Image (cartoon, rainbow, N blue to C red; front, side, top):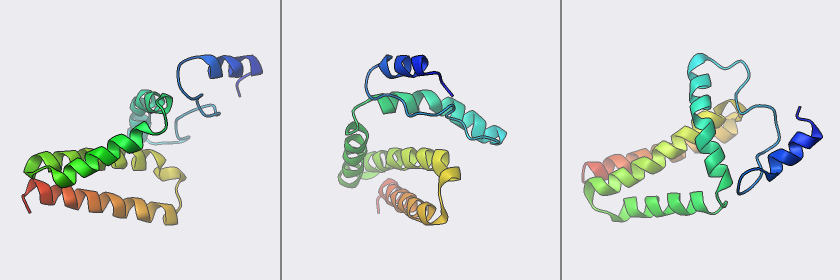
Length: 123
């Protein structure tokens, strides 16, 4: 656990919101693949955390709407970006989720992937 003086320093350093409390961003006892994904995801997650809270949902919403409105492959690409972002976050949070929390995430990702595929194929 971080000492109190480090906690104050941690909260002052950088822009945006302070980082959540805790000793590690990594899942204890994780396998090699999960450990690598979590390590590579640490910097983008911290970067996202430091942005205003409204930016990620607005960007994802804009991409989703653009995916539904844009013709053909461009729309599919926008939807695919949304799906990849959701897949990435779901993978990172999966160990901490219950079955009731996992089901809606899987359904949401499947719907976005089906929409992306339909747009890519021109359906």
